[in-house]
Image 1 (cartoon, rainbow, N blue to C red):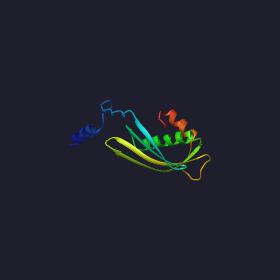
Image 2 (cartoon, rainbow, N blue to C red):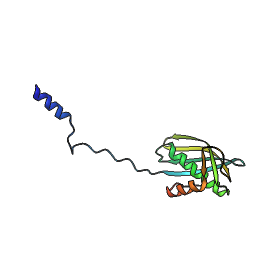
Image 3 (tube, one colour):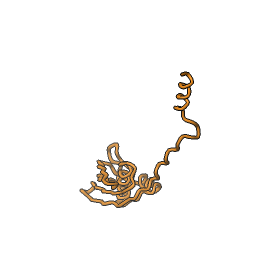
Image 4 (cartoon, rainbow, N blue to C red):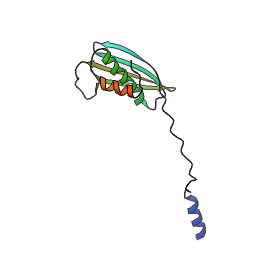
Length: 130
């Protein structure tokens, strides 16, 4: 009986070198499908972006932020304030609908971006802009 218990315990223990390797995480290969920009009011701008290959909604929200940063610079401003981003995914196509205000000076609020800093980060990470 004692021998059967020991054999059972040994059988339950993993054997070094025999553990099956975990599959590697799939490589991140985003496909950025474009940006639609809508000027809603003088400094209020709506960005709609689409992409496939996103890992999470944060990837597509980052794409929208990059579009907002570049647009802010194109308009001759330095800052933007994030108001909202709605993210949706259907059949592998991710879409973000984001609204920002743009301004020449740092706006009030906690969700502000320095357009030059964000645009540089986007360029470094290969995220396209407007």
